[in-house]
Length: 336
Image 1 (cartoon, rainbow, N blue to C red):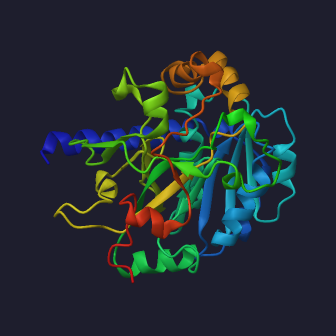
Image 2 (image 1 turned 30 degrees about the vertical axis):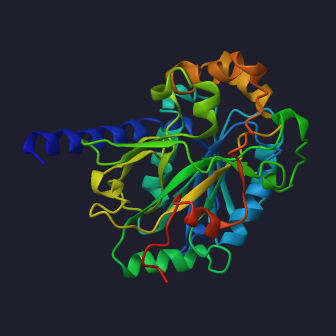
């Protein structure tokens, strides 16, 4: 890496952290229980808006996985989700009325809180519809993964976002609060993915799957990115660049093997496509607060009335993480 490139990336990281500090005043504590965080606790960071129906299962899933404390940011919700979280003993809740788009799609708020509470901890950063799957997650808690990564001197862990969907139109199956979304959305695309490398930040850029073939078939390069670096042993200078797709320092993006082998990796099961999707797509297309002024949501709203049927003859029904490894979507690498 040249001196100028190194200088540029270092200043970009400092600028991202400075942005986050400037947003500190707009993120107000609602229920701050961070004084109860233990020195070795594993933390989860998440920003959300109007997700009351999803939050009970989200907490249940990650508690069972072994998350010790949740650091959540409510972005101007009008439902009961924030009140629900404020009463949870392992949740610290902040709130803001500021625009999601003006805060780098929530990352400024999370970067500020990560800088305060995450250093020295393994931190998992996810959306409320993302569910972390890693090798042996059915028998080993996330603490086991963190301990193995520490012993291996690994600072970050990669995962591909895997869009899950039901068989039939997404509106046809009713999701009820607290239920497992993958009892409904339990199909996925086993292939149809492309991968390129970002030479500057060294992250892989993965696209494809059901959204690419349904909404972006004529413009595949505009399809959503599926590469993520969600699990990081945090230090104060760190900052995500674009959601959790890439991070600085850029060495944290090297979550894949560069010598042609396999490096341990995971999956984020994406429960976006439930019967709530059509209403959310219309709302977010109008708000224009997401990436590129909500163009992705506008594509959803314009096609199929935001009620797609993703299922096709190549769809595969989800069983477990071992199935995903056989398909080459994740790997246990050398973790035995």
